[in-house]
Length: 356
Image (cartoon, rainbow, N blue to C red; front, side, top):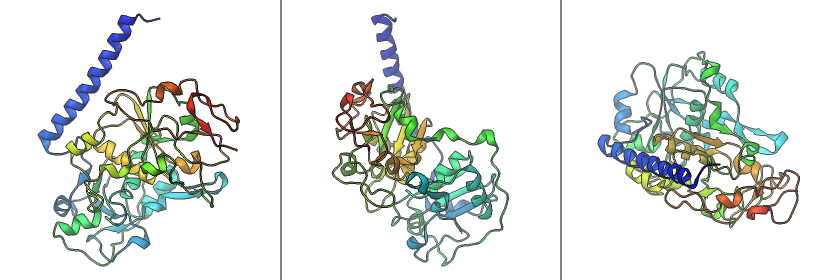
C-alpha cells in the first residue's frame, strides 16, 4: 500500500501535468493564431488549395438539405451513407463498418492517398454532419482530412463562386491497411458499463441540458420514448457550445474552445455520446482539433443505452467539472453499478435502472 506522502506526490504530479497541458495549449494557440491540429479551414484557404493534386472536396449533405449551391469540383457523398439501422438490436443510424465504408469511398472516387475536404452547411448543423464523415475517415486511419468551417456558407461568405450541380468522379480502389484502422475510437455500451466509476475515463453527454436532466425525452428507434436521464457519472457539455453563436454556427477560435472545455483532464480517456452518435462526432472533431487524441465515440449512444429493454443504469443528477477535480458523482459510482439483469428500484451509488 502506498504511503500518504507518495499519494500526495502523485496527485501533485497529475495536477502539474494538467496545468502544463492547458498552459501549453493556450500558448500554442496564441503563437500560431489557430489550433494544435491542422483540420479546420476557411473559404479563402479552400479557394487557394481545392485544385491541388490529390485533393477531393466532398459535399456531405443529404438530399433534403441541398439548396442548389455547390463548390465547383465538389463530389457528393452524404454522410448518412455510412450509417445503417440495426433492426435486430433496435438501434438506428449505426456505422456500417470498415469494409463497407471503404467500398462507399472508392465508388465516390476517393482514394487512400487523397486529401479529403468535407463541407455541409449552417442549415444542417454547422459542421455536425461533416464531423461524422471526419470520424469515419479517422476510424479508417485516413491521414489527410480537413473540414470547412460553416460549410457552403463559409465558402460563399468568402466571396467564392458556386455552381448548381456537383461533379462526378470515376470509381477507384480505397483500401485501408488493417493495422491502420483505428478501432479504438468506437466504443460500446457494454464497454462503458464495465468502466462506470473507473477514474481513467470521463464520459461526456453532448446532448442538450434538457435531454441530459430528463426534461426532454429522446425517441426510441421504431417509436416510443427512451429512458429519461443520462449515463451515470457523465458530464454535460452540449455540442453547440463549440459555436460562436447559434446563428453563424462558426466554430470558436482556439482560446474560446479552451474556455469552453476548461477542466477536462487530458490524462483521461474521453467517451462521447448523444442520441444517435452524430452530435457526439462533432465534439469528437472539436477535441481532435484541440489536440486531444484519446477520445472515443459511443456511436449507438442513447439510442441503445436508453432503451427500456436494456439493463443499463441511468441517473438524473447533474455532474459537473470543477477545475481539475473529478465529476462530483464519480467517486460515488465506484462499486455502485447494478449488475446485468437487476430490475427496478434505486441502484447503489445513486443510479436508477429503468430497464425491463
